[in-house]
Length: 233
Image (cartoon, rainbow, N blue to C red; front, side, top):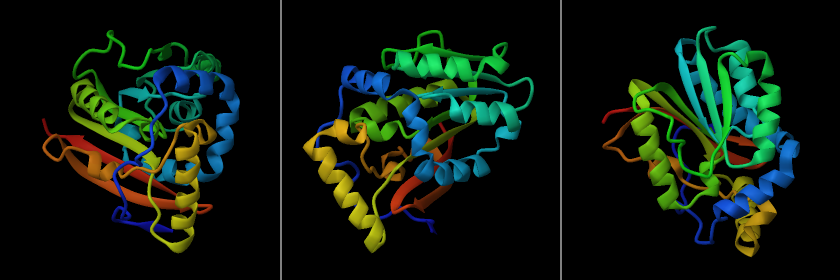
């Protein structure tokens, strides 16, 4: 089920988010089990791919590369042969998994360990796609704002911001799932890997981004937001 407008709800839940150290520790332990979340992630990621024009991308930056599953899909089937890819992650385990998965494209794909911020070697206006899937929903509103500002800096003038996150429910079933998920997050964010529903669309500064595509996708009672925006400043 899909909707063209964001579901109602608060921008962010009131419960605390994981610290960088807590998130790193969790995902170092979680490792390859992250790929098991494909059952609810893949539909929203497909919606993103369908509208992000990766076939014309020549430099891609991924914030939160995870196991490298999305990067391998893009490099193997969609990105031009001359496209460069750089992924960053705070988890040593995830970086190792992603490097191994992207070995076939080692001459043009790199994954680096980050302490949270964007690595200093990334230059302004260097990339034409900034990708992040199921990462911003771990972060505080302030941290999300910092990432979006960094994305604006890293993207070239015609670059695209490409995001997916958990979002709020808009039907009885998805509201029920969100309510249970939020309750677990408030009890202890680690139970749900630090993730919680956010209103990503409403967190995007309108003076910096022009929305190209926005879609809410539901899978197994879990709503996800797929968003593509062009930079305007």
